[in-house]
Length: 96
Image 1 (cartoon, rainbow, N blue to C red):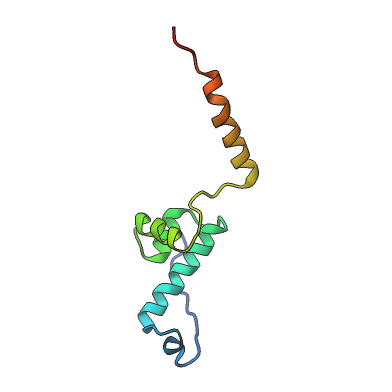
Image 2 (image 1 turned 45 degrees about the vertical axis):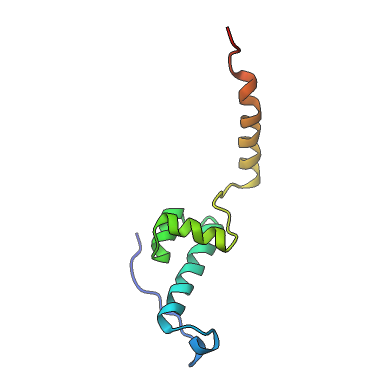
């Protein structure tokens, strides 16, 4: 796994413009990057949580807060799963 540091330059006084401290800004940038990479399917939820510096539960909570679905299915995969769910009761044995 890649480990290291990523530096992001922001204009002087930027943290004042967004009404946050330098540390809070760093935390928010990490979270936003993790959320977007997770949303795009680039990171698993576990790796995204690590990048965001949060537990997986905290990361899922952030997903809800920022309207990022925790279900990363492509449309075809979702349709197949839904089809299986609908068909499953038909394939179960009836009462004897």
